[in-house]
Image (cartoon, rainbow, N blue to C red; front, side, top):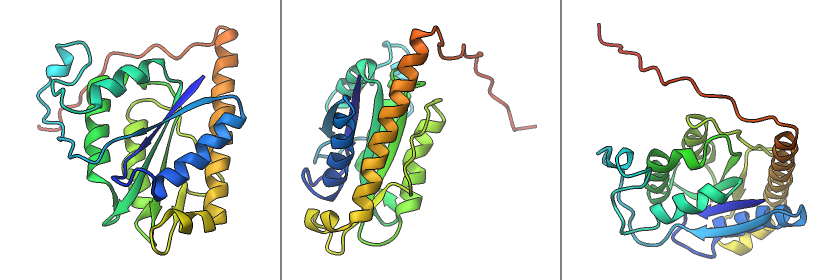
Length: 210
């Protein structure tokens, strides 16, 4: 089993990475393979709602970033953790643009697989950021993995050393990793007993204009 962890910070080895690494270590101790993916430092274009992904087999029409590469990786992955710093009480715009396109074009690679969000902040804006990331999971029928507190870490000067002093935050990350491993193993055990995901109904779209 494998979990992909996404670093939505432009700082490749900063606070968000430090938190992700703690969760990854807990997963690995439970026998789960991990891979931390840097979303990148360059701008990632937003989804333009063109619908071309529906015509070209669940890939994004834009090919100048890692979106399609991640969709392919997600097909073979079993779980996901998305991490972001907090900017103006919201996740990094880069991560949100990345997630919008990954989920819109390649949502089938994520459906029914467990996911979690984590954020790092100097002080506030964490719960609003967690909410924005987690909504991608709940619209895509993904079990949301929790910890023993909202999954966040804090750093007074926004440095990895600060995060390493947030002993509660680091514990939250470890518990999150342990819980993710447990859920993955429960799903695997269920598959061996013939328990499969539910069959989806055809999507109904309500017209609110009367």
